[in-house]
Length: 457
Ligand SMILES: *Cc1c(COP(=O)(O)O)cnc(C)c1O
Image (cartoon, rainbow, N blue to C red; front, side, top):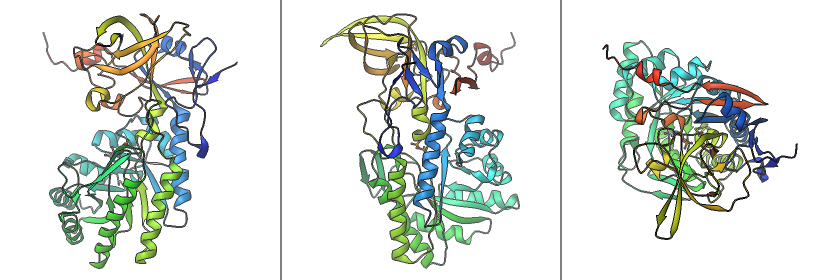
């Protein structure tokens, strides 16, 4: 078959396309994922639907693991925690674990999902700025690798809960380094007006380290930093690591040995062709290892075990959303006409455009068209004018009801942030690998939603 590769691989082995690596376009114009045409997927699994290129996600996970292992081979090694909040199902957690990753969870539900998928507790971390007693107890019972403590109050709380359970909680402290990054920029600010972490600038971070050292039922093993999301430059990470290392040096001077460092997630991807190409996992790993090496050489402290927590960069490009087009409407605007293309989902399966003004692209998925393109906006079916899926995209002017439309790079924070607004059932996720379809999460039905309703009439 003469298939067109939608995105060519790039140097450094890192695919940078907005489509997953096994997505191709057949001569008929139909998109085909890992050997399965989208028409067949939509037949078996009606739209809207998240379609996961399983091999793509696995290979991105592997790329991070290999890059970190290689870069930190001469130091104390590295762990890669997949940030489960980006997208989690039992099978997906297991696949990440099979690729050598650990799983970051931020709630009891995420932790239980990873465990149910066969990931041992010792390969999970627990995050969150407001953990419940049940979450802490579950984490202790399951023997998680670490609980990331977010505040002085939580430090005391974790200690009490651990004491009541005759346990010692292995903890990281989440520090705010003053470094924030996103896209190409990073900013360093002294005061942090946000809910996460223990401030380095105000000295609360050191207060927490000293207090953790005193407490009997926590064991301070690591320091954590997460500087932001969708970052396509390395400088912010290096800057934050340096701040964390200064804190580590201070701790060692006080007799508090801290030998693990977690530099968080936030590695960027391309949502549209206009987005920057982020450095490859190999490049990120190289820069991080360089900062760690300099710190070790300068201070003579033992090399720390280093973790990172990528979510988006593993799962976002591996999935697209398949929709069916419904109403198509031309609307006069100042500069001419905009065509509104409505699909059978919307902000309930992708809140990111409404929440962050995120940009996506879209493609006619099941046929070729010779028609000229026109300026389109892809919108959902919700009662909200901000219910936009793709703000601006050129689509063939003969697009019509019944066409399949694919929106790429929806794997992260799509299904995970889905809602039932307008009582829409949330779409399921079907994985494709080597021509085989596997349903990871089934679509909800209206009966599922009504099952929650306790009215007895
Ligand atoms: C959200 C988050 C991540 C993952 O971020 P991505 O942008 O998906 O890579 C990692 N660590 C922490 C603490 C987070 O809050």
